[in-house]
Length: 284
Image (cartoon, rainbow, N blue to C red; front, side, top):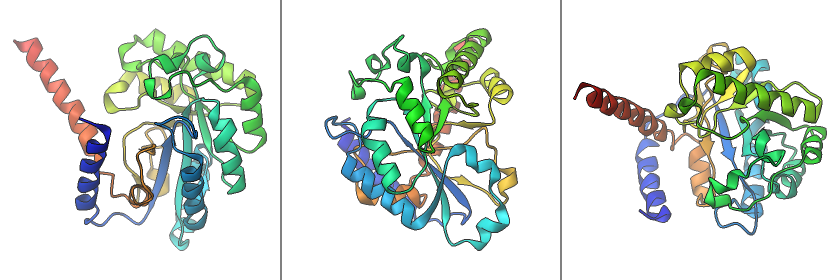
């Protein structure tokens, strides 16, 4: 099915889901990969600037590492909701295009970096043809991001699906990426994002390791982080909503207001169905 057709179907579902009221208290974490004027699957700088202007106008925009300092009472008294801007992988256009726009709009974001890609031990764009041949950030870029108030988080060394690795391999991916990044920026790295991030891309071993080494963790389960008490929000299972080149201005606004949160149910049920099929295979 073509991407445009999929997007149209998702829009129809979002329109239906958007009829139902959502909780007033929520944190919307947006996930980007690339901002680029020359890549067809990247968000254009013009669209990204528009999106950041909306956030600046209507939201308090924080980094992942700031979430632990939120106060429920203060949020209830505020008319603004909370949003977080995140980037995954570490493409060079994050510095070339995204950073100037973030600075222009007074936004601090979190960048989850695949350390093996940035230190040029592997080219992850061979896995993701949407961003084929995009160059990585450098250590200098990472330091520049930090100097401009951005947060650097870990995203493993090799961008492997952690659920397919044994416990020792998983720990190496987390510890090695964290250590390399801390050496590169001279700061402690407290946030992590699962590669792929779907429910089936991590397991109980992964979550135990995340608990051990990080204070915050993001998935790519598509929904807002809704809560009645911020202190009860699980900071190590934060959901994010992907923003990409196919999102119109209306799509962006609908993703912010929770209309696309139905995608989380599709992801979670897909994991249940997959597990049921595996069980059937074992029994047969």
